[in-house]
Length: 233
Ligand code: URA
Image 1 (cartoon, protein in one colour):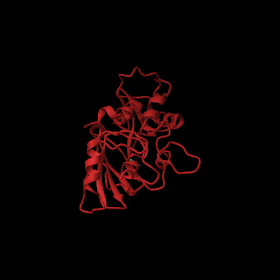
Image 2 (spheres, rainbow, N blue to C red):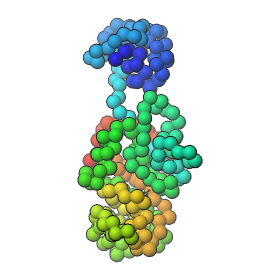
Image 3 (cartoon, helix red, strand yellow):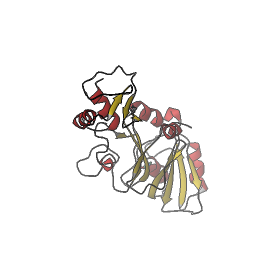
Image 4 (tube, rainbow, N blue to C red):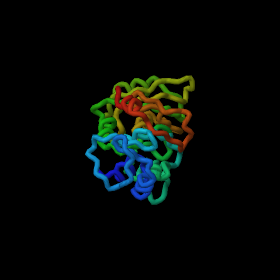
């Protein structure tokens, strides 16, 4: 790979800006200042910018606290999308949401450009838990809890995998834990018991909790350690 491409990928800047930094003598290859962007790298060199190692990240993983009214898509003609909220911070990456939350739901959305990882954490076979705080229009009942544990049969006959509805101190709120992702799943599950969902907030994916210091619409890049926690059961 050419040095200017390496620098632009690693720093998430344009090729032109990368060439400017290189020409200014700010980039070193194996301990030597290199001012030529068209130098070919073998891939084994140590590239430093301003004395700091530049390691190109293969993939990016973002935790976003989705606000109300934003859609879980990459582009949309009408509504703001979760990708729009990144405000072009990763111009050279094609990020997409790994899993969906309804427009009216809030909380943890993972954005990444790693399709294989997204597939892995969403596959029902992997049993990766997703946990939600759900506010109902009627109190949670033992019947709902037992039904969730046995596997709810939806109005259209779909038999769902066992799930959990855990009571909280507020009788109108439950912590719901799922391992699959059927369209409008939680709303349809409570619908079977004639209960409506007033609010739905995703708090956890795998073993990683939403960072509650993130205000709605705010996001942060995840470390590889945090990403691994998502994939854990
Ligand atoms: N189930 C729903 O009904 N909506 C969501 O956004 C997520 C799970």
